[in-house]
Length: 337
Image (spheres, rainbow, N blue to C red):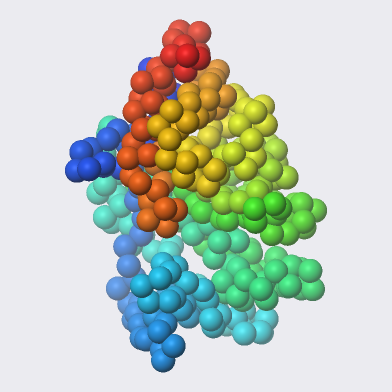
């Protein structure tokens, strides 16, 4: 089903990627795999005197979060204190095939779902933390050549991850890069095209040459670069806030890219109204899933953080399942009700 959704070749229904609800399984057409922990990496965790929990990740970044309040936290100490540190920096062993043995077993055993291999980003997701985000963004303006050096180092590592996933039998690669605030990109569109578009081109070209599709998550308002992402050949765009861009505006890319979205996690789900949520599900199928494919519905994995009763997402699932059936002409007639 997912292959035909991506090819716009009129599958029997839209794609679905939902976790269990109230102990009952729901349809999930995808499966994810990733690297196992580095056995040689010595994890360090500690608590500070201000109620914070700290740890060092395998990139060398020191993270801190508020105990019992935040999940990810922030980087409080970066491994690249100066650009001279880049000359001797050693990235993690994400390109070690031994770390993907379990992933290979999943790929071998999974024949009923579309397997996605998790990669470190398209460079920005990892590179921004190696200098701390605020310094990294300043460097984009003040030290563009050093940013290119850092981006290329991370991008090289990611391409080696892509090769490993192709070797073990995954169908696609998936990465997260949050590029937007609620109203604009984190950098100007001109800067994005100068410093970051080349890493996307490298990733997509390598993945496609190895027979893999490319799936990208991004939070925030990224409308300025969506046409470029489609042009480059990103196969799937995962937006948790599709309403931020507008369904009508996104629908212009029908037939060119697939959207993988929950019902909007900021403007629709929280209303808690069954009729409104189901109406939005029908609209999403009509506008994002037209043309014989191009849409995968999903749930948001953290109900607590967005103040969502799980049943609200389940109402959407029920409606997607009911109306997301394709007719021979590539439409979903029930979504027009």
